[in-house]
Length: 115
Length: 112
Image (cartoon, rainbow over all chains, first blue to last red; front, side, top):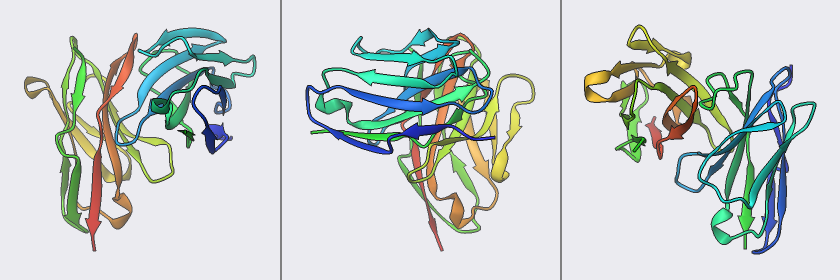
């Protein structure tokens, strides 16, 4: 059984560019949640996908969007990058579609730096 | 407004000493409560969670936490810390149909 994996590990972009981050959920999990963790802060909920549909969203602008595929892997897309988007992006998968992710398992994250 | 407060940004304890990390929350109903640990370069690992029932919750790695409704607190404890416990600890609150909210974290340092 594989855990949650994320790619890439690190990424450097410039302001205004677009980025796609990827997450492979743990085997058998149908729910993926994305979080942004800025330096010195706790993770903030971006959105959750359950069976390919968005199931809830935090206070993030529309330029943050996502997808979930039939195999339950997921992508986070961020358009028009801003300096404040620099953060660790965490993906978590679970079998429970509840937003609190009671049984969620986290990946190691993607460190995004926007210059 | 829903919020989680971890009053201590950094805590330093000696190896073998006891530990208590504080967490206070503000939430409209009885929430789900969580403690997560994050080691450098790692994702979050769930230490323990409280939904209902016994207010003293046992977790992994020898950690426990106590839910005190009257104080809106969910403090994490460990009777004897190990050097490997050095990490960042996050308290979080949520509900089944509501997103999880994390505190800002407490960085735990262990003295040899």
